[in-house]
Image 1 (spheres, helix red, strand yellow):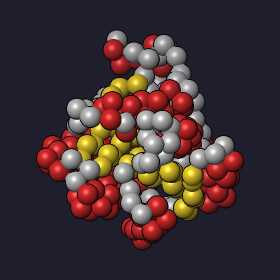
Image 2 (cartoon, one colour):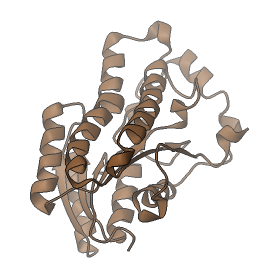
Image 3 (cartoon, helix red, strand yellow):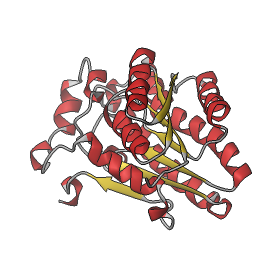
Length: 252
């Protein structure tokens, strides 16, 4: 029960890594806010957690909308009385589109979810955490935020920005009892591939050139266990870190 009495918001929690994180956190004693753009699925996940003896609520959230972020955080605090942990997990892919084919529309869509949504969630959480001089932020980045061609131009830029934001927040608020870390998964068995509907052939060829070197695909719960460590007091000295969770893929 490493998170006993803690309250956690997890975005993109209706499936994949987000659902796994919400489930593991609930299992470890946290009250969980299941946030997702898919309201019906978020409600189902929250119901599953409650049936298992946990405390959970669902909040429909489009993280690219500021009003939705405000509503999410305000609902969490109104329901539970506080917030201790924010996991910025919601994200989308970019169809492997390379820079010369990139449209403003795609760029803005990907950055709005993957980067601006993370910033807005972080900003709101910080204003809660600063009052209590405590809090944990976990951002789900990607090895695409550490390497140059694991996706298209927009996704790559968005995840590099998340890594930079993580480190900036970590240092600037460290003396306020706030920790901010990121996880950089490699290939994970999730439904994020559903956001790939018309992959660019050139971009996909370049981005997948090293896929044969990947030792294996991760299970979502493996990433959730990394998030649990970062959220818990076991990681009290860990701040500003980006933990690569890719079975050694990028170690080559």
